[in-house]
Length: 259
Image (tube, rainbow, N blue to C red):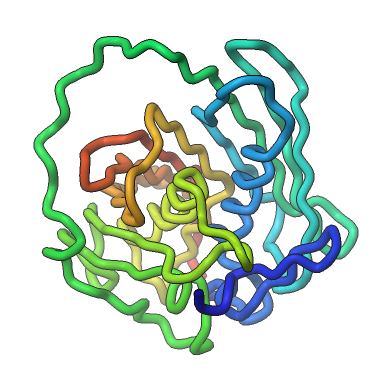
């Protein structure tokens, strides 16, 4: 497999250039660190077949392109429901915090809603490189394969976009379905922007992902839109899909201001 986004080094994870974000060459894109938190939540001790149904990440500050440590623990145990907390630290301080809900996956099937009509798949979508100039390596450039069915980076408004991790999140590991979904979900506000990149900031301060099932395959789609209030507060919401159909939703609170 190609060079990973992160490489373990003792208790730390060392980022490669593929973790970089688009706005600061010394800071990470949010998708990689959020997916690392998802990994930690998945690996926290759990009796029985538990599955993450909700993960909420709070971005306390920019994550530097530097080694990070991640810790997760169960703060409310149970056979059917568990609540977990996780932190990601860099340079000796917390930069991301997360809370998650894990639910027991039952042995018996329950009635489910009929699947929705599928949307056009990634093979029918158009590859779209990120338009803003910057470093050659970045999570948005070299870690993710990004393809638009509707919308594009060059236009504003709602978009339907497919995402696929092109390399391991952690060296020596295949990304899990949850990690793939969380890594993609952080792009909702970017692909559905309603303001010009050069004139305004629209920074997500959090990311909340709810999954009623696990993604199947490598591709995750965001059917995303952004709504803004004149006071400078916004929200990006995304329906998460895979080639089989709908699998969950994601939301991001946005701080919006003129540059």
